Image (cartoon, rainbow, N blue to C red):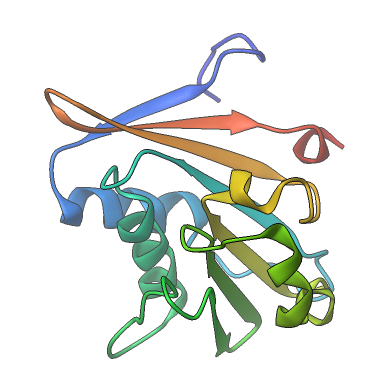
Length: 155
């Protein structure tokens, strides 16, 4: 435990893509126990702040080998791995939140799934509530990443 007040976010600074990927793997790279409810993780922040790199780090830590395609144009990539399925959404190019209906997301909100959602604010509240939120920004030392606990994470 970090000894910080409950309402204060944890924060990290990374200076390279490798550091961002390693941090992501440490924070989210463990497979859940069988039957664990779906976990929704929001990755929010400015363009180029490390959201996709963070998602790639989680996917690598969970066992994805080979190229990891960005869902920038398709909006969604699904990875079936031993013990977990990961749904990676990148909503940057979402024109209208109604477009989400055609992705069949309800099929992925099941036990054993992890959602990594970039640009969640573009969904205009049409996604399940987040269990965890990371906010990304760029500063003079590289990338700043803050973990913000959400309501569902405190259940």
